[in-house]
Image 1 (cartoon, rainbow, N blue to C red):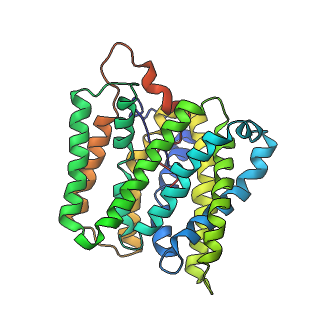
Image 2: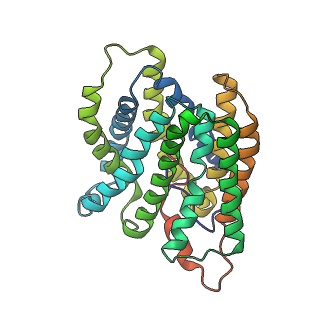
Length: 315
């Protein structure tokens, strides 16, 4: 679930199809937190992640082969492997494990940190500078997390918070890897190749932690994660980027955490706490400020990671 970068905070959708794709993706990438929370009640997080990647890979592989998008990936398999580890293998397991202890609403809010970490990486790598507005945005965003943790989180769950934050950091690094090293490779090929590699890496752990029985709720949650929130989400994303451009599509990052919170409250009866009420607007406002384009004469480099990476997902 790569994050947005500077220059992606404006939404200027000009067609009904664009709005339909945008709303669909906001919902699709707000749902995974709920589905993961349901699935990990009965399944080990690695089984959930492995099942999701396997289903996603099976759906996307025929499309990728038909478009001849997988062959270019083979020549860059080393960097694709690194991308797979930091974008999918590590984050999807960490997110699942964190949701064995945190509500889906809390997890969704913590993953909203992706734009903040991406902004830090962009400036540290010299693609842009950390001006006053960005510093203010980072301060506000992390203040939102502090409010969430301070008001809601039991100290016994701080490791789960760290796991969710680690997921957000992995997504940010994944966006940078695609933006810097895989820009000339079809994104569909990179995603499909990564899902295949992830499935292979997860496989022995899935076998080791496989359950004796799978409940209907857990099983269908994994199917939905793979079919809708992974394969389907990327196909919708590619259509959305083709309709409105990559920069405008990054606005999704600011909305799908709200969807996650809403679904958690309405469908899982999770509490809408003071920490969420205080933390969510601070994180979103901070992300918008931190990812706004710095006021410099040359900002072309700041567009680099945005041009090819999906915003904010696939959680």
